[in-house]
Image 1: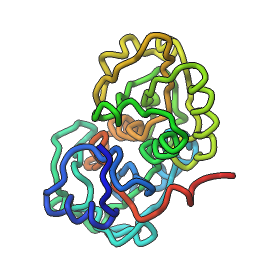
Image 2 (image 1 turned 45 degrees about the vertical axis):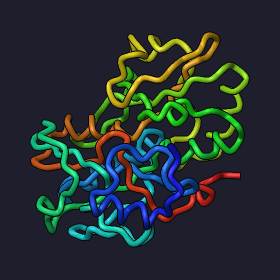
Image 3 (image 1 turned 90 degrees about the vertical axis):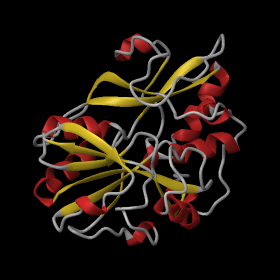
Image 4 (image 1 turned 135 degrees about the vertical axis):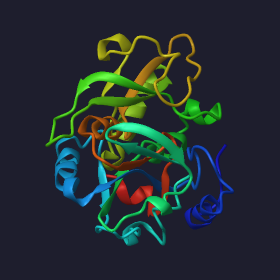
Amino acid sequence: MTSTLSPGELRRKIRAGEHIGNTSGSAPGYVQCNIVILPASHAHDFLRFCQLNPKPCPLIAVGDAGDPTLPALGDLDIRTDVPAYRVFRDGELTGEVPDISALWRDDLVTFALGCSFSFEEALLADGLEVRNISQGRNVPMYRSNLDCTASGPFTAKMVVSMRPYCAADAIRAIQICSRFPAVHGAPVHLGEPALIGIADLSQPDYGEPVRIEDGELPLFWACGVTPQLALQAARLPLAITHSPGCMLVTDLRNSQLAVL
């Protein structure tokens, strides 16, 4: 269900523990970001990974070491303003928490990456259904066989998110999303899932399955969960991300990212 709260109001509710779960459809009109937090000693290699793989890792902002704010994105505290975080130690997921204040260190660097939730608004504005929103579900996400370009210890297969459309609407969706390269841009694949290594659309690796009607094609967009696989491969002593679907909602407007 779409939320009419402003980004600041939503972040305050998240900070107070009054909003949990995915942020799809929340604060319409504003950019949502995937989050990666890691030690400064590995920040350069991860920055390069983002630059080499702009479709799954479109970089929106980078924080200073030890600074939990991202002033360009709003009055926020990265330690408290995401609904749920994943904590990785030595490449292993050790848990999900609603607050990372106790884990914060002076050497941690925050990366904010563009999220597909931002372009969903443009699809809706053009009259296209976004099935995960209409069904009230977290968008389905899958591990594909598409290789990302490695940087230092960071390497991964691309994670993709899926939204189904009939052929005519699929063409329109591609046209619309091509205007938003800072939030994943156009799909990376459409049609047969097996061609990109996905065996069963009813069994997503992250998120929840959505209904696919007869005659609809699955469209697959590069997804910001991809860096989580790269973090696991790098086996850093500590790394933190958002939980899939639980994004940082910023004060940056989606329209500011559109390419005419």
